[in-house]
Image (cartoon, rainbow, N blue to C red):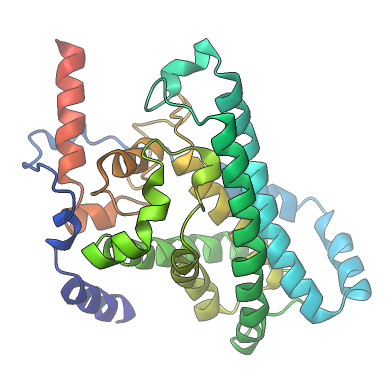
Length: 318
């Protein structure tokens, strides 16, 4: 019922023609639906690592130590902040090294070949990110911690099972993706784009560190989808930490600018991936979903991308 209510509300709050008011893109029906092969969902690997860690026996003693030596509020706020910042920079460092080295053998995996951030851009965006993390995200977490607790979040033993963690994190991804899609479409309406979202689109060839680079208001707005799933569920604090790290890495991945062979295009039909989101930055419209592809398909905001992929396929054949 919640899904249908949200679907109805968003559909009529944000008319379908809005995404193309600023930057129209040509769109024709897809001629060959069998061509639609999608990215392998990297969450499979991430969640497998989580499951192995949960059954390894190392997490429980460490968690008991934290419980015995850390007060509740600092543990919630500090842990969430470290998950956000640590997940972000740990995920971005490998891609940033590739951007700096510009290895010729790796060039073929660059979605927009030959387009790399300069050292000056990397330094500037790093400082901007530090300010966003400290001045925007940390206060959000500090204010939100009592809310999470009110809705059932706990840090107490026992720890959740790896199955519970995986199911809840997958649910968080679905909620995040659906809500983020509509927030993102609203950010592409004329006023919102000019006043807020244009900051994020300064980079039409995105790179890993640019994933969270945005106007402070946008950071706050897009934090709502990220935290809605956990508020609905009331998870264990450990699950929340894992979710925040994975969400950060997912954002890093789709902004990285790299599409590697192990993102197996023919395996998983729902994950959007790097090229899907890179197209959005390059064209300034379409492909609004951040994680999966179903919203763009359902609301016909991927048609320009479909045509683009068709032309690519035809060019390869010729």
